[in-house]
Length: 270
Image (cartoon, rainbow, N blue to C red):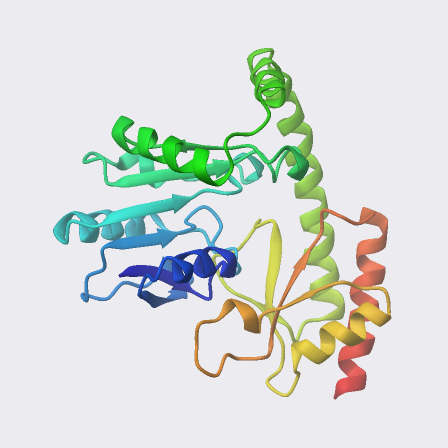
């Protein structure tokens, strides 16, 4: 049994289902995952910025999760996929930083902040688990190219990555502010979930009559790309009035224009 957030990062859920795990959805509010007392063996969470809502798990909810896992002898898989790309002034420390019993497995990636093509990530866990993970990886992937690993290690050691992150954080903050302002101006009817400020994408709820699968198709034909939200839900009948909108792969000067185009498509749908 593995407890997961709902809505969720769907690709992780598909991996668990392939392993014949029983996936137990838990709702997400403005503080993160909402636990119940029915225990699970594992919990998979994205506390830094929840996927897809962007909510940052509160300090109180983090303590509750750690206590719950200790009480039921569960393991927490902390996917901190965008830890290095978090551009808030004072981000909360990882769950792993508060782990006193070795039950948090921390995984993260260099793909978000640096380059998706590197396909480099890392894990922080007990040595025995690291050994098992290495053995399993050899069967699945062997290992990332050694020359890329060495080059990345040199890049980190020389301090270039920290310089890159400072520029990246500044650029991300500027883009976030532009999209936030454009959404307030052109799409005030689309609501963001409280607690998701300064995430790397906006998770938005449209008026109930709007089907975001249709909106996605219409917007794409008008030159604006968004992601429909239904696929992220584990409900039998997932809501179809959510969508996700990013801001990194676009000219900042085109952000407001894109949101204005999206408003036009929404208005045509009624």
